[in-house]
Length: 554
Image (tube, rainbow, N blue to C red; front, side):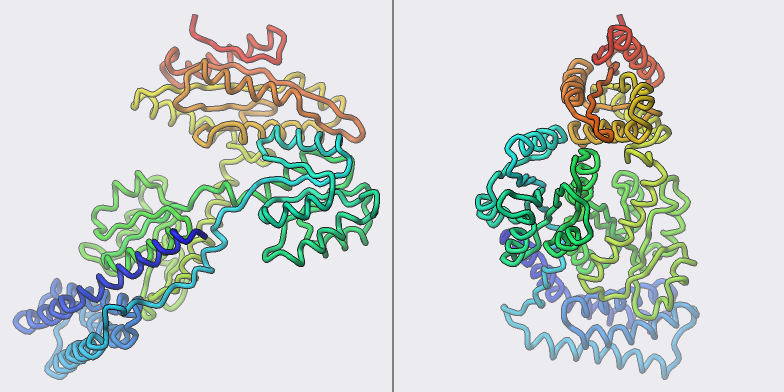
């Protein structure tokens, strides 16, 4: 966590606190004015406005440390809500009670306001809740006394885009890991001077580190006692020799997955600006991308453009309430399953099923503790992304499946045409794949497919889109890229892939692929562009395979 980020976040919270304090006298006057207006003429609109003003005061008061003020405002809010729901005016006794509660609110504020000084600030938020969102290094330390074996393993890892350092001596490794504690360690267990040297060294290192070092042990044997000692030394994985590079990369992908995860997109809809921006600040500090809307009637454009992973929705807002707005969103294409979490007071819902009955997924009781807010949003978005991923991703490779990549392709062609920007489409096919399956078995063939899919993901840009088109065939959409540039990129990947070693039992073998590319400059729609790329792929195979061919429409 940088000191600058910490300081900026705390300053943002202090500014929100100061804004709330500055506006509070006006809020009190607004509440009293609306009540006086109701004494002259009782009407539904005014009682709704009064209820919303008191509701927002209750939320803000508790959030910014005015517990007594918030509690009294919540009591008044519940009384007003009953009149609002029954659509009837207060009698003399009830009017006196409301008048008395408003005066008590003003008195409480007068007492608390008198104690405020220029140094009055809200309690500093414990930033330990944000530590899990801090990025960590994906640097790999290979520790092996065999110089040749260490360099060969490093070469294979570098093909997949990892940064690697090799250590052939344990003492040099021990010095460097203390300076780079976030590195992932690939530790050989056996060393000439000690058959369990790797484990013994890692135990000593772990005792000296503030946070556990992530270590994958590599062993020449597979015994329970050795595995137990590895676990005691902090292992996150245990791999036996000969090293299966696909299995190793799978483990590294799992360890580093959180580092490349796309930021959560959260849309907050709340007509109370201070609470709205308070919640936004907390989620942004947790590395989420947030859009904050205080006017629910302006949600449409933001919703379509932002495409949130989750919506935080306040219940009581002007023009429409949260439940009505949720029903509108649920009827829009693409948002029927977007998680919607209501922001509610303790008396608005009794159970989660009640919230779900009203087309929401959950509710959070205000005021919300920062830790609870971050945890709840993270849980809902993670679960939703996982379910969506299963629907649109190929089970073997994790890439977009056939239907999903075709849908993305059509969308990207439309987008590039509208923006008049270049776009290339590449079809990639593994050479002689049937022979690989026949010679080495289907499991080996699957590992080859996974190896190429991983290489494509790691070597291409985040803006490029990769899918498994079928069997051993892949499709790649390269945005803002002409065919010549795309061919250069794919050819570099082809060259790397042809040098990778694949393992099947005791045999090692290499594989190549062919590719056909076409771009939007020469083919004006998705259908013709796809057909042109397939034709170029056919030409690459006819010319001997292990080639990249561009179809320029000649």
